[in-house]
Length: 330
Ligand code: GDP
Ligand code: GDP
Ligand code: MG
Image (cartoon, rainbow, N blue to C red):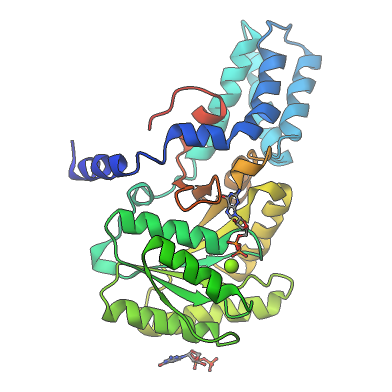
């Protein structure tokens, strides 16, 4: 067993609470809307004909996995039906599961995510968190900070959402819950200045991880672009390769609209991954597949509840197993 695997095993045991069972519970609604329907169509030894294929297509289309993704899965199913054929309709079920897994593993998240590791030669590891209002940025930052801290990293949060009056207070509560430090200025302060101060403080206090909250003003795209660019530029004065990560937070309950937001944000910022929140509250969990397939952006973390321990590193095989109700790896 390599060193990395050893560390991984050690940290994995520290995250026992963040279990596969919880993921399964979080995906309950998506499972009943998507997988259970698929099962009822495919599990009954039905004749494999055009009507069956239409039924499958209909289920995929209405499960928020997106038109493009549906088409590519259906093409694979049809190709196999024509070439090798299926001996039983349940084989189509297995094939769809495999197709989804291969879509998700094609855009992998870094292994470091799962163990909250940072490169000690490149600290503070700087994460900027962007997304429209209400998607769960601040909550995600609290959860992420807590998980990094549990893994033994020193974390500092920057309150650069200076736009909303109550934003500082809310982030302060999360910083306290997570047991990490926070840097803030007054309401209306320049977000770039807050980011600058946070990085300076992080270096002075030898922090491993910096997480910067931002205000999501997508309705004013020009301003948002200018603001995010300025923040990155000012951070680079302190650390030339900052930010290391730009996470786009998306609310899974908004389904296809999340995909639209991702397209817009990709135009104004160089995103390195997606955090998908509120999977627990929606039947639209298929959006994970659309995001990965259509944007080629890795889903890095998923939110499956409002509490501080309700954030999990995204793992494609666990996700698929939890969704298709089978045994997981973790
Ligand atoms: P922001 O405006 O993007 O910073 O969003 P907030 O962090 O303030 O979150 C908005 C709402 O979403 C809050 O009520 C959170 O409790 C809720 N929320 C965030 N993440 C999750 C999640 O994973 N599951 C559920 N059920 N609610 C969440
Ligand atoms: P400009 O405002 O577009 O000209 O961009 P600058 O790169 O000159 O600075 C952007 C912002 O970053 C400034 O308005 C400050 O708020 C902040 N900033 C830059 N340098 C410093 C610094 O040394 N200390 C602090 N606290 N903030 C700084
Ligand atoms: Mg917020």
